[in-house]
View: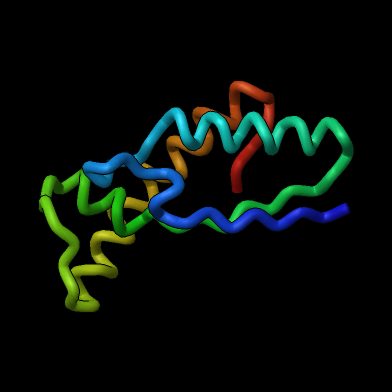
Length: 95
């Protein structure tokens, strides 16, 4: 069975807006369990903009599109790095 999991920004960030490693770890544990049961798991995640805001220490989220796009670009690599660290613990790969 294919399982699609949509993760919202607030589910994987701290109250300060940075990426919550414990939350991502918990999610990846659940993914590993589903994989062991032979399910195909697809994660659709938000959080790239929040990751960019936190990385650049902006304090609050800007509203203009060019800045949001730049923040998403900066935050996406940090977000994927966190997923890859957590998935690696279960011998899984994030793509």
